[in-house]
Image (cartoon, rainbow, N blue to C red):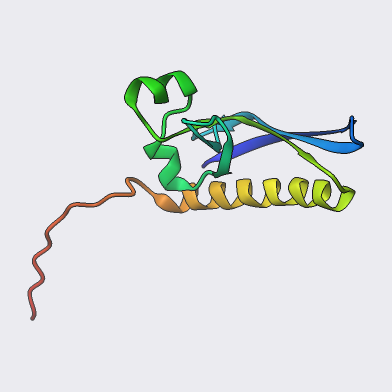
Length: 122
């Protein structure tokens, strides 16, 4: 059973703007690194799906060493100019983490299959 613990923090920053920090502080059955970043720019790209969890390393240094296009981290912080966008970030982060947990729980083994099956009629 995959479970994640998400810690969300908001703050008002210069602008005025609204800073949202989402951090997966604990994970069971999966890595807590659930936010995908571009290696070249180190910018947040998207929320991880099951394939990302197996395909991309969970550190920038390893991604650079391997020449990987993306890497994962357990924390993403973004700044928004409205309260509505801040609230949207909070809700979306929770929804996407729930989707990832559901997807990983449904996975039941490898995401890639290479098999041959012979089916014989009666």
